[in-house]
Image 1 (cartoon, helix red, strand yellow):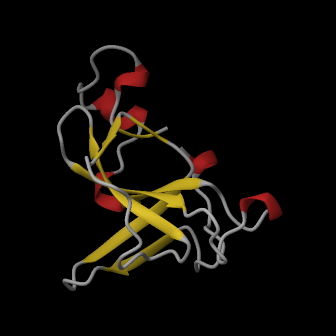
Image 2: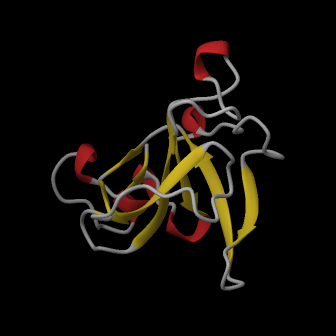
Length: 123
């Protein structure tokens, strides 16, 4: 998991509190990849994005349906993020701190059935 945590260019670190338009604060960790997630069946949107140049889509746990966070995708032609210049990435995930479950924790709780690729959360 720790190898996938990173700081999005322009953000003040990899673990930040972000507030949505309804005033809800989400303690969010930015990671390069996650496992066992599904995206909401809607188009990515730039509306109220926390990361300029990136559109977001809500993500859910494939196993239980809980809200995990968001997938952020670079908008083609964005002036803010340029992955080819090392200043950004094509996509990443913002995972709610309360939704993070690592492989060891799930095994300790006896929730793992099947192989480790079937687990919710981050690698």
